[in-house]
Length: 123
Image (cartoon, rainbow, N blue to C red):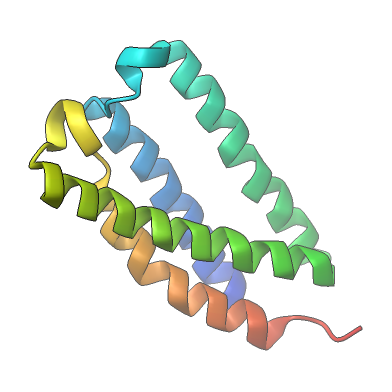
């Protein structure tokens, strides 16, 4: 394995963590609905899935590369969504926090997708 996919995957996981911290720090709107404990529990599950997926990418499972591509693309789209929602509503604090880390997710997602496709094992 060339390792660029793993490098970008680890960067995405770091951006994902930063995103959750940013949402908590700036009070993403959903926190008022479900509370901090519920928000963190949901995000723990949502973060555990791609961490587990990384194990299978390192084990060279083709299906894990395919799901990794979906994860990377979703995170990029989510980054766009946070930024667009903040611009449209004009609300960052107590609104659509997550735009700064969302920029990192956008930037990392496309090289990650490219390297996952490039390094994906053949059947």
